[in-house]
Each structure stands twice: as structure tokens, then as C-alpha cells.
Length: 332
Image (cartoon, rainbow, N blue to C red; front, side, top):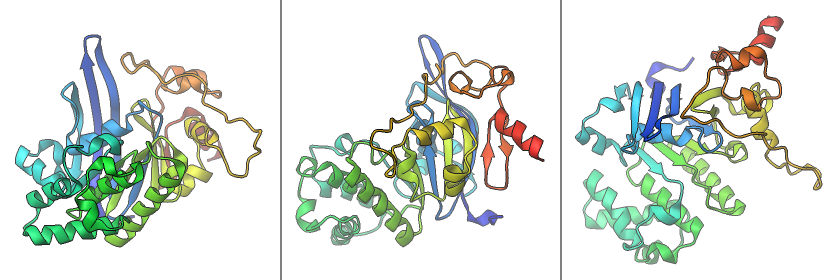
């Protein structure tokens, strides 16, 4: 068991809802997990599963239409949800940094890369002008951008999509954060650049010793980088385990469906992908039972009546599925 002092972040029973004219949309419904220092956690699921909303909640970036209904987010044991505005400003970009989904829109087109990198350094460090410039050059070199002195003077439109994402990573790393949240950092990039960005994050994690939360809808992207993986569906965690457990000992039908929909290098070129049938549920009218039951080929009567509890298969593997619970109890 991990020592308590190694715990960096604890999310406890977090629920976040959005409100509009039609009522409440339950985006996140009571999720809990623990992240340790230097650990890489992958959060996967379809669009609308709540993975980005839950992670934005760590930095209290929930839009005005949203509200944290319950829960705690403890960073070094202190609840972020109860921090003052000043404490939160010291946390953002300093101890916890974030790479957003789209590098095309995350950088301001009106300012040079140097200006945008300099902002965080001015706010969170005591470096003078020359020290900040040397730091910026080092950051661009760290993320693999050549000729950093020249690149600092350029505007975002002068960079390719992959290079813009590298600039975003450099900005996130500027103050040596303890936790980096990467919110689908490879979504807008082609597969070759995706692989480069994932490899870069892997190298930086080993070099700097920071923890990473890697959010994606693609299980294939996280296979090489994550220590453990959380699978989310309809605002809940349906399966959690080590990377090996999720890929080779998966138990939830939704996890199985996600993996089946990913193309494999050794598969026949004529073999068709197997999409998950049906659509994600409408979170404005949450029905009783397992949210995945209408799309599940092995759903039982109890699945549509009662929500499955989280069942511990072992110390690191947890699943919420009546079929798995039934089988585990029969084998016990």
C-alpha cells in the first residue's frame, strides 16, 4: 500500500451539474480516485462521459452554468473547492498546470510566443527579465522546438499544429508544476504527431517527476504512458485498474467495447471495426439502473433496476458491473 505522504491529489465523491432552461444535466456523478506523486493517470471515455468536466473542476474552471454539488478535491490534503481566490491564483499554472484540447485556439494569435510564456513566469517566479528569457529558451528546447531564440519572437500562426501543442506544453511546464492535466492534448493532431506528443510527455514525466492526468477518448493513446486508467461512462467511473488490468483483464462491457473499436496493427485489412451500438444516455433525465444497460449485450434484469456498486476485484482493480459481480461471487 502507498504511503499517505505520497498522495498528491484525492477526489472524493465529486458531483458536478449544469443547469439550463430544461433543468439539470448531471455531468459528473459522485466520482472518487487518488493520484500519487509521479504517477500517470489516464481518464478515458466517450465524449460527454464527464472526464473533462471532472478535471476542469480540479482548477475550478467549471463554467458559470455549472455547479459543484458535492465532494472534495484535496491537493496535499487541502480542499481546492474551499480555497480563496488568492490561493487559487497561486495554485493555477504554478503547482497545477493544464494543457487544453485545442492548441489552435488556446494560444492568443495577437501576441508572440515569448509574451505568452513570459506571463506565467512573471506571476509565479522571482526571475528577472534575463532569467525569464533563459528559462523560456530552455522550455522550448525541453519540448523539442529548434532555434528557440528565433521562435520566441514568432506568432502562433507561424507554428504547425504539433509545434503549437509543444508551446502549450512548454507554458504548462514553465513553473515546474507537481501535477499536469493534459486534456485530450492529441485530439487535433495526426497520428504521427500524436505519438510524438505522448512520447514527449512520457520523457518529461521521467525527467521532472511530475504527476500527469491524461484525458482522452482513445484507449490506444494511453497504453504506453499510464500507470493506471479510469474508464468513465455517464458521469461515473465504471472501471479502474492498472494499465495492464484494463488492457488484458478488463471486466466491464463498456471497456471491452472501447477496446474493440480501436483498430489493431495485426488485424485483417478487411476486418470491420466493432462500434458500441446505441448512443450515450441523456444526462438531463438519468434513469435508475446501470446507465450502460441499454447498450449492453449481456444486460440482466437487475441492470435496468439497480445501479451496480463499485466492486473490488483486488487492491488495484475496481469495476461497477452486475455481470462481473455475479461471476466473482460464483467463483469465490
